[in-house]
Amino acid sequence: MQELFFELLRVAVGQMDCLSRGPSAQEWHEIYEMARHHGLIGVCYKGVERLFEFGLRAPQDLSIDWMADAEMIREEEEVYEQRCAKLVAKLSERKIRATILNGLGMRRLENAELQHLLRATAIDVFVDCSIERAVKFARQTGQEDIRCGYTSFALNAWSDTPVNLYYRVLSARNPMRNKVLQKWFVQNKEQLFHLSNDDIYVPTLTMNAVCMLQTFQQRLLKGKATMDYLVDYYYVLSKLKGDFQTFKDNGNMAQTLEILEMSRFAAGVMWVLQHTLGLERSYMLCETSEQEGQFILKCLMTKKHSFRHLLFHYPKEMIWPSR
Image (cartoon, rainbow, N blue to C red; front, side):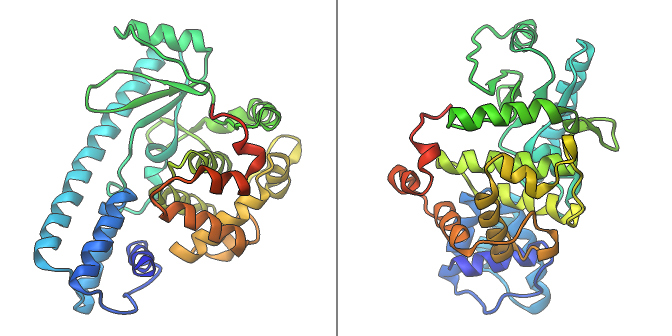
């Protein structure tokens, strides 16, 4: 069943024309539930639409529900993008430089058909200022209850739209590794501020290639990783086509992954992207590791979070409490 789900994703992103076989009615419903769990209802519906050309159709009642879900996601994403632009404008008025992270920061990379079909779970914005100034901004909006975490806090700008203000982008459970991450981030922070076509800051593609990988690792360790994040990541790497910028001190991608202790994890993620979405080898950060990839994929596709399972595989990270 998982393989049919992955095939549908490859059809949606244009890596396949058709499924290897026609799913049964029950299998279509299971694929739909899998897509819902991973935040990929809209993207998978694009795959369903493309299969019409081959006479391969989901059950009619399911297709109608799926289409309605996809349209709702389009409308919701438009609202998110509008509100994100308003938030960035408010921050700019107060002379706070901000850049859009994660999903909304990457939406301009998808092709026109998929641009509004990936659901953002929140508006994530990095503010280039101190924690105190970020908190002051939140209080100026009328928010009194502010609970600062290590990387961010929730901004109650809209009741129906989650917003996170970040003052740190990267973090690791292991304090020694976290110290290295914070030093690297400070040295390369300017790569977060690349002007997009609409004059809103987003990270450079190469910076995203590193930051999104590290964020995905932390989500996996917390049992919160889903395939929608990897679809975003797939588009980042597809846009880069293996042409990575260097970081401070002319560090290339291989050196950067080694410094940040992400080489093994990156090799596993590259295998997952190749297996599930058909990412071309020449676009990858590094060579693949099937063993690591199989472990990551199992964690991704298993709904129940196993702390023990992760502890044995990533002991240097999991022995420390989550930040």
